[in-house]
Image (cartoon, rainbow, N blue to C red; front, top):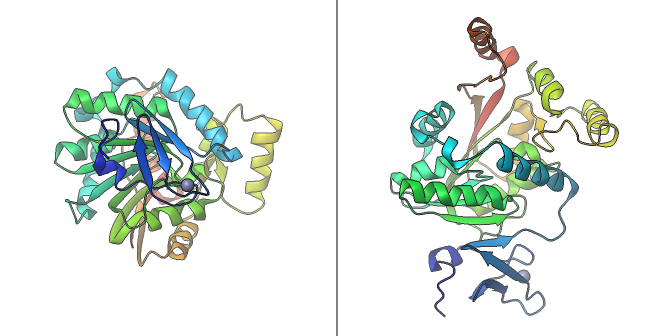
Length: 310
Ligand SMILES: [Zn+2]
């Protein structure tokens, strides 16, 4: 059956996130072929909406906050791929580790899809997954502006609407820290990667820099007891008011290694992700340089990368 609403190439890699069975396209919907499920997912502007109806609490907090972010702070006009220094550093790392350029590249938690747009420009077939439709609309507009093609899906990373063994490469930038059950999210990366597929991820690092994140946006240090105390203060007492990026944790290197190994990754390589931080609130150049220097010392590293192979 031919349809003009969604491309066959995308339909071929999608599955029902509720029962893991195939889908067929019908007008503006995707329908699960499983007779016991028959769930219908709508397609808006070519983007299949595959979010589970009932969102877990951590996801709901994050979705609300990110929709707000994309309405207030992120606009297409502000995206300049050529001058984005964090994007440049990310692309250097991805290109170092990408092996199969012909396979599908997934940016999970893509936001405005700056990374996949840059990869698309070099001929890679990309898919962007995000739970914010607002973010995906910005993504689509960015791809159009830059004259490249890509696929977009609205869905949950801890329950990805993709078939197993689909992607050659999965990139997540500041994403897996937004789940209470981190293991579940990393297991999904493993499931959707092809054998020998690579994933490159960044997460906030549990160094002294965590104090800054706790105070500024309600980040949660992933240490037993402290985690429960901070969660109680931020969610129950402060009613999520200060959780600017939704539910978000900081991890030790050991914890990340443990989680990725448990998912089944054979090679796990973790290190400092050295990149540019805008530090927009710091007016003095001297102070900005000083803070950048401090962030380079391990005791204060803000972010780490996890490179892993299935
Ligand atoms: Zn189903």
